[in-house]
Image 1 (cartoon, one colour):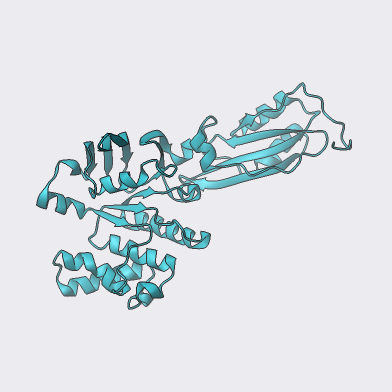
Image 2 (cartoon, helix red, strand yellow):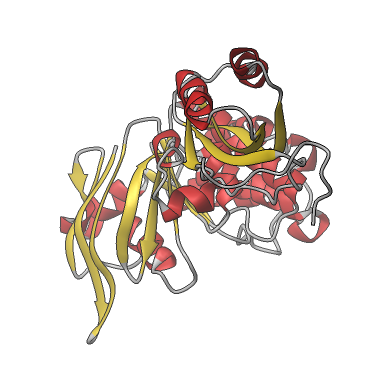
Amino acid sequence: MIEISGLTKSYGSTVVLDGIDLTVGDAQIGAVVGPSGAGKSTLARTVNLLERPTSGSIVVNGQDLASLRGADLRAARREIGTVFQSANLLRRLTAAENVALPLRHHGVPEHQVKRRVHALLDRVGMLHRARHYPSQLSGGQRQRVGIARGLALGPSVLLSDEATSGLDPETTLSITTLLRELRDDLGVTILVITHEMDVVRGLADHVARLDHGRIIEQGPVDQVVRRSDSELSRALLPLPPAVPAPAGHRTWTLRYDAATVSPFWVAEVSRDLGSDLAVLSALVEEAGRTGVGRVTVAVDGRVDAGSVERALVSRGLVPEQRPDAEAPVRAVGEAVA
């Protein structure tokens, strides 16, 4: 649905985007992450041609937007709805009037405008706030209205530019849930520009890391988080601090390597080894529609390290940090220094 190839954007001698290649499939959710100044906002503005790229192509629905001009470009832009960071609603218009704005701008008959606005506000759960002004809405409610406005012209692509930035966690979750539902129900392709890694884990199918105007790493979310040597993987699925290991135990740091890891793996590995595993820290979630995780466990130091590793690997877990099997182990019950 979206295919960006060799995209560059320069302002004079300053190169802001440098050879961007990115593809987001039909009815998929792609995310672009990166630090401030990486070029995320510029990329968002070039995707909907608010900024014309210096070179490269932006193909949406088989059309290269960068090659279009005038009426052809305006028609193609209707295929891309945009949701902005602060919703950007007009203060003097009600929620319904904000959603109706693009429809009226394109000359849609008024009876169709009213029907479309009613359906969209109902779809995003804001029909009961149709006559409220932006100042009377919460941040999450304004974003829902902004999403409805972005969908007003029936686009095939929705561009979300930091749409959850500044929202509390509960509201952020409600917005990401809504975006997933819109993808599933309407078949719309979504490109999310964000710096929030928890949003990417819970929402995106594909992720790309932008740094200094270049894509450093990208891939399906569930595959990226399984990479042991990946900076993006560690950022997407950070391992919480671990509690101290019990005396006489060695610590193992693990990551999920298989697409499906049994939720009972701790008990299963314990049975294999004849020794209990102590879970010291863990982050296990769904990402890219599969389970992913990083876990720190402790195993009795008297158990052979090779046996521990084989038991873990057989359950779809790979050690990221393996304890030194030759390191001295405190006796069980010995005081921890």
